[in-house]
Length: 90
Image 1 (spheres, rainbow, N blue to C red):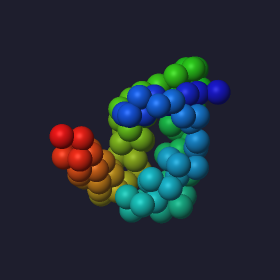
Image 2 (cartoon, rainbow, N blue to C red):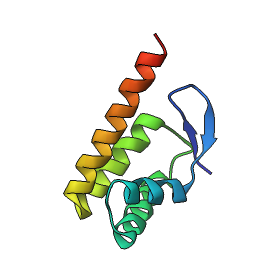
Image 3 (tube, one colour):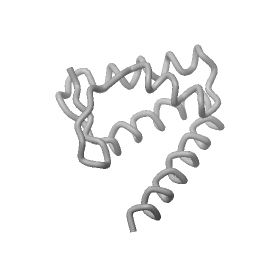
C-alpha cells in the first residue's frame, strides 16, 4: 500500500481512481485515463511512500505518452491550483 504525502503535510492512501479522474478532467479519454492510471500504479508498486510532487510528475509523464494536449492541461491546472494555494497561505 502506497502512502502519498500531500503538499499540506498530511498523508493519504494512493487511490488509482483519483488518477483516472484527474486524467479525464485534463481531457484524456476514458481508455487513455485507465492506461495512465495503470502505468502510474505499476510505477508506484515498489514504493511505500511518495510525495504529491512525485505522483504529479509520474501522472504528467504517463499522460504525455497518450495525449499531449491533456498533459498540457493537467500541468496548467496543477500549476494554477498551486498558485491559488500560495496566495491563500500568505
